[in-house]
Image (cartoon, rainbow, N blue to C red; front, side, top):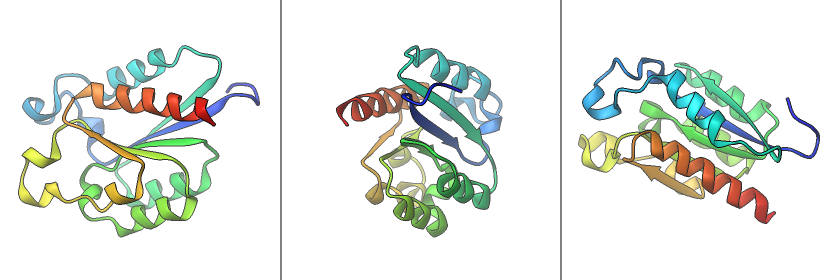
Length: 149
């Protein structure tokens, strides 16, 4: 963990993202979750920022992490919960922290039920369809946002 001057960025990966590299590589790519996480850690090479990464398949654990962790910025891929979770939406509204929603695939080019996000209108931005780069761009946006504060 870093010093008290560091800003903390929390990254939450939702359900089934532990299957990256195995599950539907034509949609989600050939990289593993560990490779994605290593890219995120390597992308933050500044002593200004600390990054915590969390993955779970449980909606309740996501809500707990959002509401009970100390951080300055949230990057979240709610995965399937994007389309169904009022609980995650309410948690985001409750904490009022700057948040970016990310998705590896372009949810707007997928099945109709995946094209609606319950999260998008309560976050500052959405990045989707760019594979691993969606996360890295989200991280860059978080850094820019935190440096402006």
